[in-house]
Length: 111
Length: 114
Image (tube, rainbow over all chains, first blue to last red; front, side, top):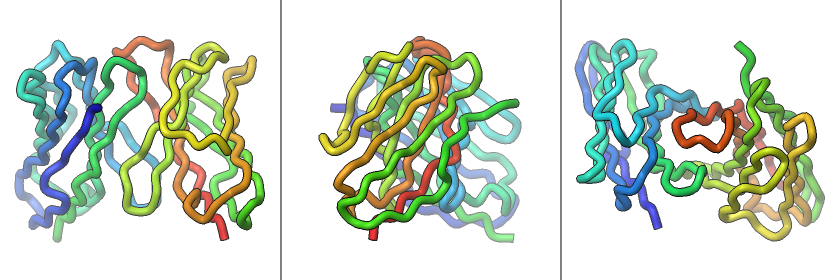
């Protein structure tokens, strides 16, 4: 059974800092990995999708990497802003179509 | 761009009542997924449909049923509601069962069972 773990559970940083969120998964037989953002009480916004054959994806200040063999992914956020404050969820898609989510990292960026 | 539409956005029910949640996928998307996110929890997969047929099933209680219609919208029917069913219910859609496709999530339906 696939299990996804995200560390840390919460992170508080001052504005402007670069930061890294971590995600690990137990079964390396995945098709893709996605990073989502969720604001309190809101829906899920897809940030980056990395196919199993890819090593990284970039979008603006975000960069996600994937090391499938070791079961790890990182989300790098450059020059963090208060508007980046949210919960970031990592999810993997394996043999079936369903996504298996981690419990998320709650990020607070202080002005 | 059109997104996934869910209705209602908020729903309050009493225990033992029934509820129906609706999901309208992005135009041309033929695959729909349902997820349940309890308070402070990560989203858990319930069920999915592709071309109106159930394609996968997760931790969906027997009290719940779902279907996908000819226009690809989907409905999640919940009966004999329990307090523990209070959660945010997400619908997501994608084009086909290809695993290269992103699942696009709707805003969710917040269900409160009293």
